[in-house]
Image 1 (cartoon, rainbow, N blue to C red):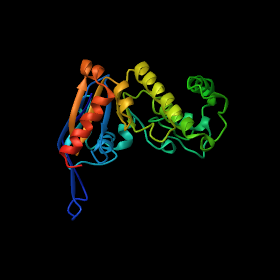
Image 2 (cartoon, rainbow, N blue to C red):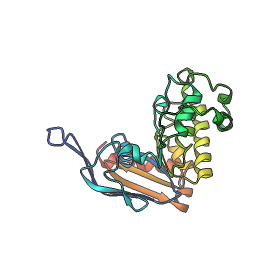
Image 3 (cartoon, one colour):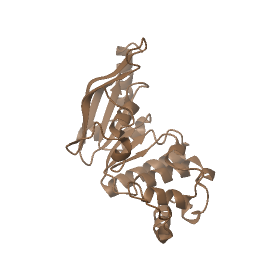
Length: 257
């Protein structure tokens, strides 16, 4: 379970540009939940993910993972249990290294390297099997540089690599936004498959309302650092894209947008 308790977050504190994003923000994500998060630009969606992952600090409040306070835990230590896929496909892979080298790095995340070889070639068949599931032909390109792949291929690899080790939580930061519609559909189906098979707790920020409605078992709408809508269970199943769009428009009008 992931918990944000009483989070205060300011940007540019102590300056004329000081801005309070979160003021006593609270969120609990239960084990096994797949939470879709939508909202306006600047509503705090990505900042919330960055706080969960430890990418940015908070002024007050606590972040709790399975009962353990991790507020002051370094990002690299949290990453042993958290997999993350970014909006930019280039951020989840190393372009100057081969597919095999990238897979090896992901396979050894959180482990002690020492002075041994970074690539364990005895794992090549295992990597081929994993890549074959993507249906993109990457299993036959282990010696190809990742930088020569398409954005969709790299994002599929990033998703696979983020969950190769025994992570419990998957953070998805608009991970289909930079892809063409057909590739985005493939990535979303793959995401849903991985979350279900590995029984992960997932939080997905997206601007695609259809994805937010169709995927996951809980839906949040954020605006100006607050959760304006929280649907789960049967309420989530019953909601339609038009319902979410109407709610989004009503909130925007009420806030003067």
